[in-house]
Length: 420
Image (cartoon, rainbow, N blue to C red; front, side, top):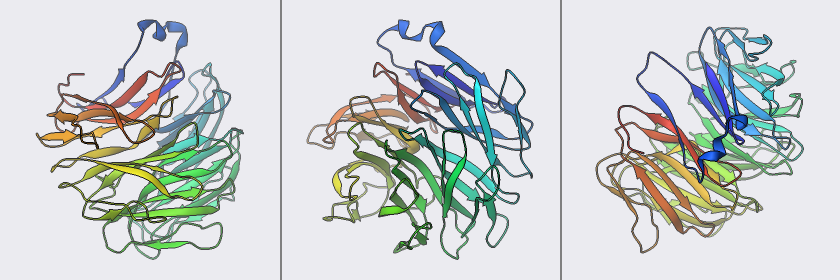
């Protein structure tokens, strides 16, 4: 049963599973307890008789709330007046819903395929309140291309290239379909993931994800094929205009071992239109500026984290920083966001018992014996602060957001005891 909560325009999605011991946490770092007065709170609960997860959300120019969830069977999305969406098969489908700032349902849409499963991982809106959604679709049990329809009224069919592919779709402020396309490994049964999306006021979208093999990143225009030099998982950063035409692609040979456990990426735009990307990588001499002068990093051991700043006009790198130890250190997908002053923050999880230095300069800012962390850098890549929360193995941060006063909120998961 996804629970939508609003506090001063901060929205979190929660999935309660009472049979599990994992506890979802939200940390509120506040300047004043008065910021959380009752009149600013909003909660909406909806559920189905099958699987359902709240996966992605956004707030448009009218401060309406856009929610993307996956579900099975029939889901009720309006707690005040019964409004149901029913999937045509047993696989998961996407419910896309819009609520006004009082929590009243404006509209509800559903899309997907009969033989495919779908999940949204990122949602954002432009200045005209158009909605951009990214995620994955496909099947791990069926071979050959599988079709999913991203138009709730029909006529928006996209076919997979492999088992599970990325998708990007655009809808207007009323939930009407505009266009959609898939990104898949041509002729191979692999699984790709689009993890996050950031959209500027003019409707240019920036999508990040993990992939294998060869992908055409411009399905709605002249083909733009990119091929990884190995069989491992790489990362992509791609820009699309408001019509879904690809403008440029950054391919990172991140050499991750799995798209599910470490081939993650996340992105956001600051108020000046600069693009920040964080993610994970392994290996030596990984080039983070393939569209400009080479700028390489080498991991310290297993999976390391990076944060990079790019020029949105041409995809050239401004700077990149590495964070990591000899253990596996992970940025969570969708976990980077910029505050109102343009400073990027991200969260994730750390492994091992050693120290991780979050300061890329000559200074040292170590976090030791903590799985949870929150870190922030300034626009030049200098460390602002890093804080760890003593916690157990497997704990991690998953989302970061801010209220109107620049207080930072973290959502994630924990198992056992954690000290915040």
